[in-house]
Length: 211
Image 1 (cartoon, rainbow, N blue to C red):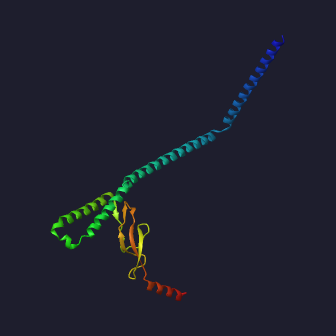
Image 2 (cartoon, rainbow, N blue to C red):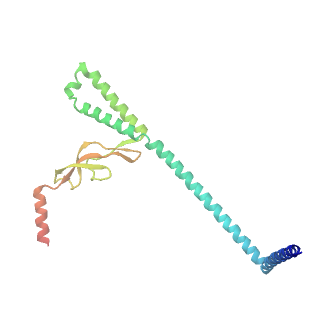
Image 3 (tube, rainbow, N blue to C red):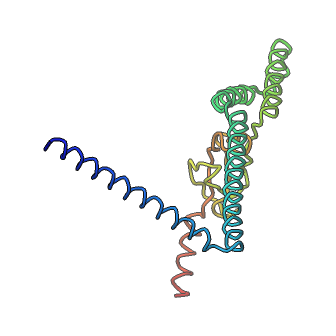
């Protein structure tokens, strides 16, 4: 009998709990309905319009990011095609240096000698072919002589005393410099002018007097 009563009590407790849960769910649903009813049609439209605007903004951001990524990828690809030959370009520039040294070492007397004339002409053709190759692949020689020194393009190897030009003017080119598609490939090794010692002393004296 006692066991039976216990079971009945447990069942009653379960029924009560289920009834409480049911009542709670009903109350929650009623609260949700009240919230929905509390919002007017205009408020619902404004809310939906805001959500639409947010989605449009997200879409535009994604499109902009994809467009930027596409442009970066195209630029990287173009740079790879342009500058991927940098190492080759440096080697061919060194070859050009050797050709020019060979040409400069040939005197007019040797050039007029029939026994080596064909060799000299062949060397000149190689030099011209190298120039044509430079033009095709975008290598340009840096103009240095009589230009103002530019640390982005030139490397000063010495100073030369000169009063007939402005200080900082390139008066000697030791090794020519080159660019590859406007990017520095090799700086020009140059000599840069400075005032003579006499003029430097005069300038100091004038400065002291003016003070």
